[in-house]
Structures are given as structure tokens and as C-alpha cells.
Length: 149
Image (tube, rainbow, N blue to C red):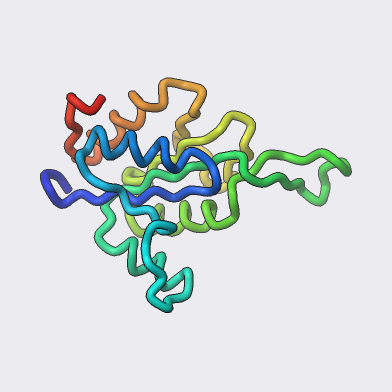
């Protein structure tokens, strides 16, 4: 998709939502879809998610260190930073709905990354994430306003 029909969905936990929202608004001139900003209308969360994601052409998924957990086989007390469970579910949903080439996962260093998603490039917030995200958006045919960079 290109031109005026692109819609970007931000999947998030507790962190960095506002920063990514503002960045995407500046570079695309469009307001990304953020589920928590949408009215409930008496819908269940999954109904709201499915309906609000209709028309989405690209997803930016924020794997931020909002939770901690461990494998049952890990030593007691050895906790790993993890993204919220809803974020992992929605990451998989968008991979299935849009294809991997239209989903970008930005992550905090130290966050456990989904093992079944290995081989796909994640973009670390510690790297030049803005440039890399712009490259992915352009590759997906989403117009970028150079003035917003």
C-alpha cells in the first residue's frame, strides 16, 4: 500500500507508546491506531482489537521490559525481562494478518525475544532505531515526510 491508504497500528505494553506515536505522526503525517485510545463500545478486548485493526497495513510492536518471568527450568530467582503477554499475542496476530514484512518489533535490550520468531530482524531501542524503522516503513511502501525526520 502506498499513498493515502496506509494505516499503522502500535502494539504496546506500558512503555514508550507516546514516544513512538509522536515519531510516527511526525514522519507519516498520520495518527497511528492505538487500541487503548479507542472507545470500548461494549466490545470484548479481542473484538475491539480485531475491529480496530481492520484496515491496518503495518504494525509496530513494542517489546518493552514491562514484565518479568522465568522458565520452570531456570534457577529459582533468575527472572528475565519480558514484554506484556498481550504484546506477544498481538505480534503473532499481525504476523499472520499482514506478513512478517509488514511488522516491525522494537525491543528494549535484555528483553526476552519470542523464540519462534527467531531469524526475523528485531530493532533494538539501543541502536539507531528511528533510521531502521523508517527504512522498514519505506520498504513497505509507506510514505515518509522528510520534514518530520
